[in-house]
Length: 118
Image (cartoon, rainbow, N blue to C red):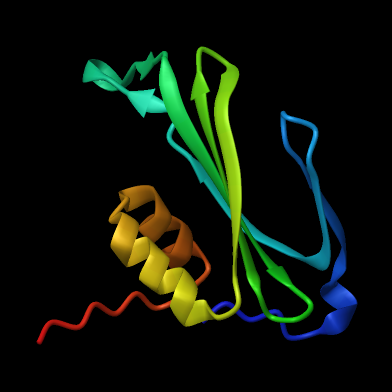
């Protein structure tokens, strides 16, 4: 479980989107991941034409802020953010989207991803 245990770790955060919107909150950056680095045959790094970058924050009120950007040749094509009031809602979103990068992002923060099958 992602643990932001001490309010002294919190700071003013700002996410500036390409379209001019600025998301402000008091919280903590948890982790980020992107799939821009790809390794080809023989261990050579390949140039990514399209890739994604995800970031995860936790606010002082225990909400999660998820940021996603899609890139094409170093330009941001699409950015969005989403807030989740609870950890479970964040996990439910990840399960619904079924994107590997979101699962890896949650794993890096030790948020358990439990998929129940009836």
